[in-house]
Picture: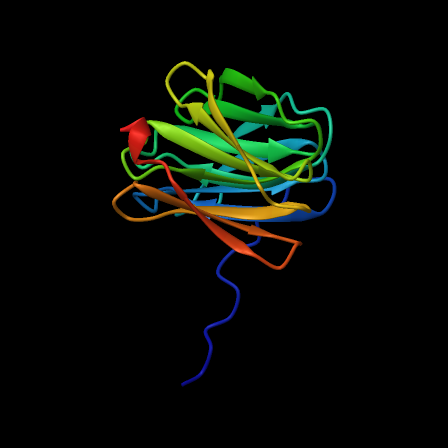
Length: 173
């Protein structure tokens, strides 16, 4: 089968793009860049919908809420930011990590966020208020990634220490 080629080129970032993520309905694509912005694109037309500005260092990871109304972004500015995807407005800045935040994931019900950091911790956040819920410590080196189980009761984290840790987060429910 012959490849059809490039469908579109989405231009606008002024530096490297580190992460992309489709909205749950597939209508919008988000991109995160070292230019300290996140951009939202109309997937059908390739048109820029919003430029999300506020991070003070490169943006490295993004994740859509299950309902598609909120986008979470992580940065080397040690924060997670939550954005309203319809308006492009900043909703919350989640502060607490003491080093670069490199991964973020939404719980399946959209109520909780997990973030992973070079500070060797995973942090859990209330997605509605932006308030911290819990810090998960145990990795002995950088935590690179977090992922929720489909039932939302277990969180997995992966680290430079060569381990994957499974955390019981069922008490958050």
